[in-house]
Length: 106
Image 1 (cartoon, rainbow, N blue to C red):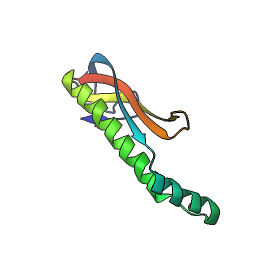
Image 2: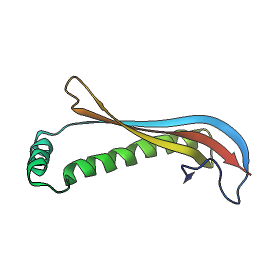
Image 3: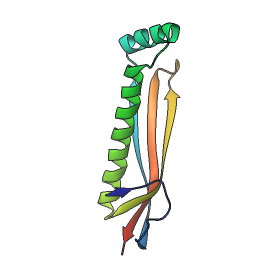
Image 4: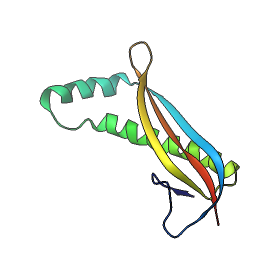
């Protein structure tokens, strides 16, 4: 499955637009990751635990979106967009969502 942020594919023609597809992933916070991230805030550096959560969330949301496109018979997803939001009373949840347009190529 071709997934791209662009609205066209060089050398490919869209035969049919199958509609919007989406994938979402909601992840909970982890007290240990939060603790070590707070130490990083003080001493500087990258918060590897959070980076991994963001990366994993992006992969899971993208996989869900691709699965939805496959069920429609798509060959590609065009115009993919990724959004990150914090949720919950204390913003302790992270939502990653991917959206795009499923298409059949000729």
